[in-house]
Image (cartoon, rainbow, N blue to C red; front, side, top):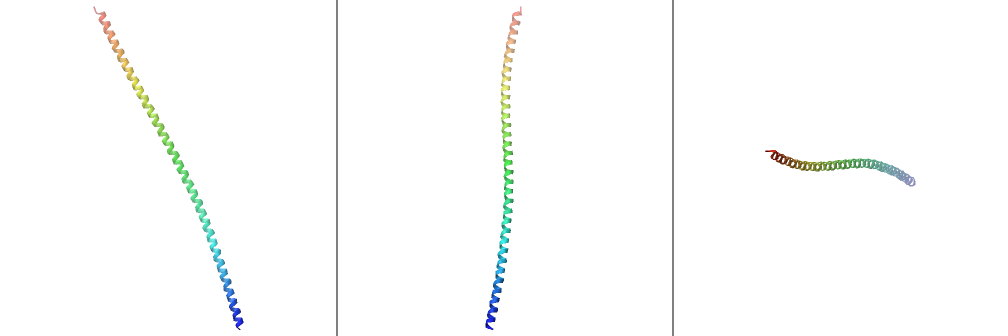
Length: 122
């Protein structure tokens, strides 16, 4: 009877050991599956993050290019404005010199007319 009780105890212990081993195996499998799912999710998040960063980098580069083009247009407009202003200054100066020459010519013509009138007077 004692032997049977010992055998039953050993069999019960063996059964408990097998159940614990099966439970442990199931838990390890579940943990491995959860870890694999987490790695997959993190990988997907990393890909999405990388795509977002690439999109933002592209937008930033386009904005920089647009700003550089705008600044270059502004510099071109300023150069054109400065050139036009210089051309107007030269034109005004030339017109002033021309007006002075015309005044001098008119003064000479008046003096010649006065001299001619004086010489023609009896």
